[in-house]
Amino acid sequence: MFGILYGIGVGPGAPDLLTLRAIDAMRHSHVILGATRTGNEYSRALEIARPHLPKDHQELLLDFPMTRDLEKLHDAWDKAAQTTLGILAQGKNAAFLTLGDPLTYSTFAYLMDAVRQRKSDCKINVIPGITAYQAASAKLQIPLCSGQGHLHILSGLASEDELTQQLSCPDTVVLLKAYRNYPAIKRAFQRSQRDGSVWQISHVEQEAQCMNKGLSDEDKPPYMTLLIAPGKRR
Image 1: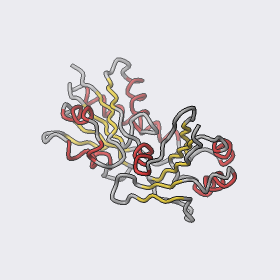
Image 2: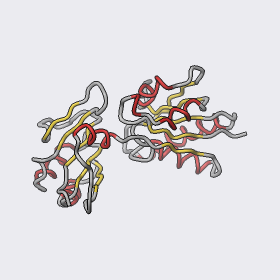
Image 3: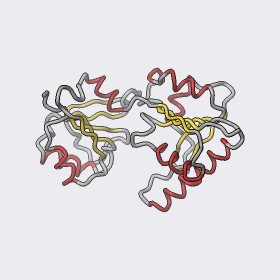
Image 4: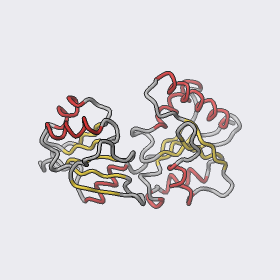
């Protein structure tokens, strides 16, 4: 009998923000998988979930390099898929833990695709998690959208011109991966005249949490940084 692969979002950082469904899935999993950078032996997602992990579970870290080299990335995804399928073939359930939500800018999406390419009938259950921008908006009590307004979720990997164009809208904008290309991101906010209303949030729901109005003077903010520019109420 083949095991089940769970993709579990553990939220932004606080163990009590995991859902009951996520906790139940972990308790029915024999192996808990976590993502780590190549050469590292630490998974923040796994540490967040640790208070809820079953006593007799096995932990395994999968290496994912921090690179834009597609060949290296595909090799890492394929290797992770082989490892995961090897576990499932033993009849064991495996739970891959990821920060935030497993299908929102998450490594799990790539693992899921790689697993399905090798075994199309593999049973996969995805359990959503609270995203960092949802937690940040709750902390700041900033509505993300209401009435006829819209919510735009952008990636800091986009070009300055593309970001400037997206920021020209009157709606709320959330920019994730803000640690990448920060100088260009700041210029985009300045060009769109939204730099005065934006909030910068780092490590939300974690010990190092920091929330400030306006953009930082530094060229590279902390890794877990996002920006929220509230929109006009419509």
